[in-house]
Length: 135
Image (cartoon, rainbow, N blue to C red; front, side):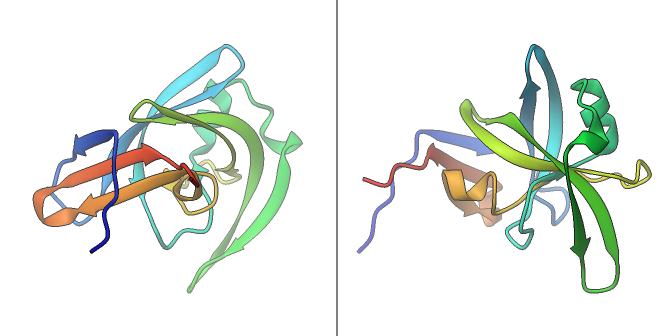
């Protein structure tokens, strides 16, 4: 039998099939609370353009990356920020959509899931979380 230990538990709304959680993004003295979808299929964390603006980040000064999906593609710009979820803070490279019309905030594998231990019980709408500790 395997056992994992978590330091936090969060009950999310089970109203639809998405797992949406509150996070805070911080860059310098600026911080913005955000509702983001946990997406284990997403390679990276990607947020709306307006969040970069609220953090006073010069969007296009970041690392430009072209993303491809099953039926489309989009561009985004990467910036190193602090991402805080359930009291667990990590420094992460996250991306901001170049297109301000895209209305999504996503917590993906690189930049968030690779920095925490996550337990998900979707039946009970609960997330269990702890900082990643390789020991």
